[in-house]
Length: 495
Image (cartoon, rainbow, N blue to C red; front, top):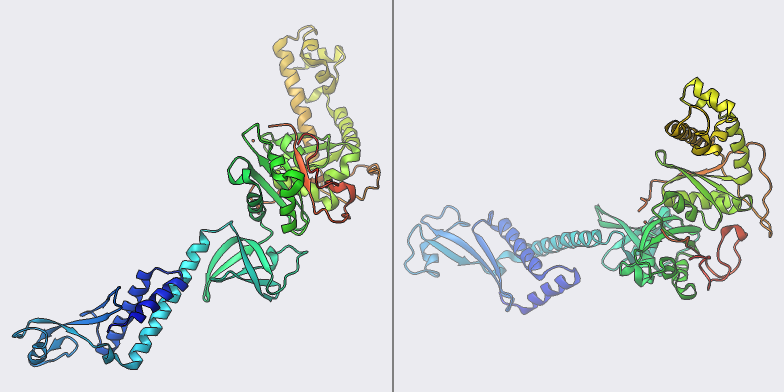
């Protein structure tokens, strides 16, 4: 059967379904073989050829000359075989042409169904493979339907779902609206591959910055960590090995144009951009921006960080409803305990009063000499230093060094216990215009935050911080959010 329309139809199917032409032709052959099997009971002796140029479809059956004929599907009489070969004899193999019309309307319909079924299966598998390679990438689609909070997004070749949990809560969606989101998963379902999208995942924020910042696309600036409270606030830690590049400034852009593009896409989500540091204490201090003049002490084995902040910076360090310290903890991967200077000094005084010479692992004779010299507490021993300790009779350099080392270790251990105070949910601070903060009540528990494990946390320079927010209107957070008042000046001093 010769028909150029067949080839055109196959080419059109391959184009529309994004499949190879060879696959579609091979699928047609398999469909015809299935039809042959239904008609003759077997297809083992049948070959199907499709000519690429002419569109001619040839169906050939190999049959053995026999007399009498027991199986018409596998055997042929000598008289019929004479139409194909000269002087046929029993046992000779003959290749017979089977007219396409022999199959009848039903067989042709079955062939068509098999073709479309296999093409559909192949198309689904191709879609699954294509989107599986796009995990973490940002794609654009059109809102097709809203079903119980979940949004079906038309991607052209397939549908995707933007689950309610992956949506920014402040956003509202309408049918026909264009939406951008990040591919976070592709799953196989009965109806075909299901693409799962997200607008809350940290990778979405990373990819938006990569689209806006050429330095990130070129690998000159790297985003090391991201933490988000979608639609509210985000913190981004950036790094560059090139000292000539201002990593924070590159992300902010001239007059904040780059970061503002990301803010608009995220419906006004404020973004703090800080410079990543390999030193945990430095990194934590920067992550707690916009609070300044902070001091951090790390407990490396426990991944805990004690941060002491000036009383007037307490509200900024903690943030509204603990948002700032919580984001900093997720960004750095450290459990952060923020305590104000007044409370810290109060606790420090109480701890120092408990640090007696009995804590030291030294002989009673040495303890007596220290006490006679006026160093009757560990605080006085530390303040004296190694040089003054060696002035005491019977205490040499090695002994003084050992005493001082023990005293410092004991004191640091006691200070780290501040991290183990019972946690109290931080209260939202609502500072007035002068940002004054009322003194804490007796023995308040310091504000603490622990990192969350749902987003993996991906090395020094002067402190660099940028804060971006939607420029329109005032925010109810007031000064404590640390958002830049002028969007054209996004970096704090040192950025």
